[in-house]
Figure 1 (cartoon, rainbow, N blue to C red):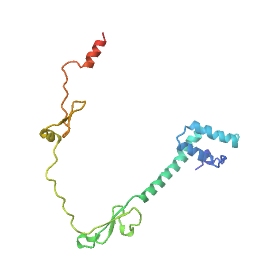
Figure 2 (tube, helix red, strand yellow; figure 1 turned 180 degrees about the horizontal axis):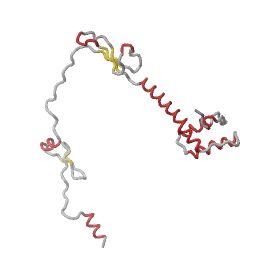
Figure 3 (cartoon, helix red, strand yellow; figure 1 turned 135 degrees about the vertical axis):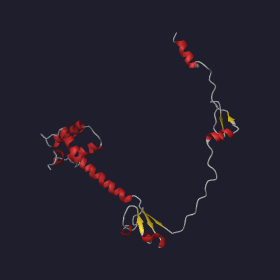
Figure 4 (cartoon, rainbow, N blue to C red; figure 1 turned 180 degrees about the vertical axis):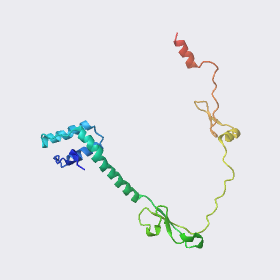
Length: 193
């Protein structure tokens, strides 16, 4: 596969960055293709007169070369993340009830976990004892609903701007509204004439 004109360009800036590195950095910053072409052509006019790169070459580079490098970098990053995530291993006790699991170390990630001992810093090893866990006490009664709480409350209302609210259950009585037009509707109808 032939290299694109940006990857094959040997011209470098005074600080040592190549044209490909400049274009890739600008693509990382999400610059417009015309702006990238203008920056690169300014460099090329100083160091290699007669050579120029069009925005279509930058677009071609972005679709073929740049995305492959970006995809490879993402894949490498994903591999490094998988090495740092926590794995959980279970060490089964030597007991007849556990059958072929007795005395083995298992993990949900691997079929044969005996070959892979917990060696990473973030790994967790759970050791089974074979004892029965204690039963948690069942709740005595289900919690009351808001309607049940408000029906038995004596409603100690707190003075507030909005008409008050019960400090125990949060009940707030409905505001009284007169039948007919509201004050805002009445004022708006008077202004029309």
